[in-house]
Image 1 (cartoon, rainbow, N blue to C red):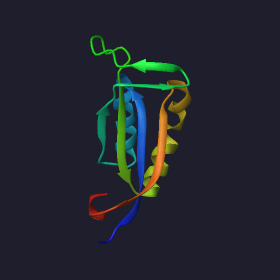
Image 2: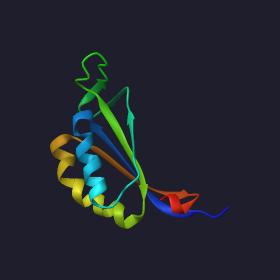
Image 3: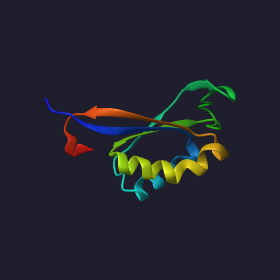
Image 4: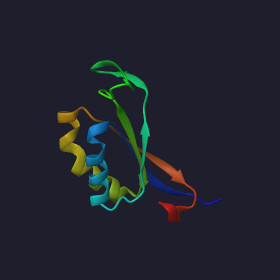
Length: 102
């Protein structure tokens, strides 16, 4: 089975800001993405949990797989938001099957 190398993008984002992350992805030509709910976690700011009653601390995980050029363009666009909104951005190389999907 043949595979091709692509870039996986993951962004942990507060739910109200998720649309902005998606808009940045679409602006650089990344058409495929998934937003996944998260339940809890811990990081530099301490422990957080999704308060499902109010949604006040709801976070989502933005996930996409794309080529390196689009991933780099996305990172350039989203970089100003990283510190000001405390986003967590992860990039990794992945081998995908059915390259035409990515």
